[in-house]
Length: 418
Image (cartoon, rainbow, N blue to C red; front, top):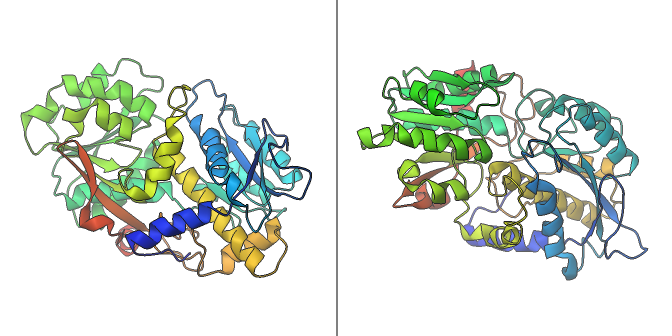
């Protein structure tokens, strides 16, 4: 996928991409319409945990709805409106199969998803229908091997990149803290690869907090036990809002001016966390797969989510939601190209375009890359995007280094992975 390289071009392309969309929004898994009339539509599937008991990604469906509404009055993709078909995963593993089947039966031409549990069940259902799937935060397994999966925003790159950043920052005593889970061992593997890719000989120490932790004081004490110079916090915004106060109370940050948080956008910080914990996040260094939220390219998005702030939705400013938004723009770009080629907008034609085009546009939110070439890291044959932006927090302000220049760390990661 070829992306504009100048900041001005990125912004112009973002507006152009969004200006090509008209939306009809559905509730549940129905194709209910909103303002679309009786004419033909282009269907887009959206699945997320809208009513999950833990509500980790409840903001994603609403953000996608608003994203298409933003450009609803501007004409549509080639004059054809989009119909959003939603399915609530409810945080239940078996729902991923049901939602995948219902979205496929509805005739969607692509699926945007943030699947907290049961992700391995999604691509096998969508594959026979040749429906392209865009995971919001692809973590591994089938999301990197299925030929209908497009991990435009690869979560594994964020996690390896966070440890890579720690290595590049010269961290000698790094410690990574996360929730104990089936994927915790994967995180440690990714961190080890990232450190090695940075040329560091440091050894990462790992602290796994018990699932369902509410009292973070014991975990925070364990994290700072050997006075680490860098702490990598791999958790959601919701988790970090309860973890960070305990970490602050240890006094770790004040012991040395060199102590800092290091990691990846969404895993260490969001806009909300920067505001709520300015002392702890000062000096933070992180990697991001797109430009930081403070870049003007995000102005439309940030304005859009303002109206959702009082709806008790979660993760509005995290990487999960950002990635879903960028995936949406990528899907729009693919549909536009199918139309320009004079072909019918079907799932199969969109899939073919995504797998063969050198130039799918997503508004310049990511570094230039193409689905025709992947970086072989471990067994991830569909890892297309391996570029990150390095960001700092100084005097409470988040900025990207080198004016937001992307750094391709893929070759170093591939070499470190062996």
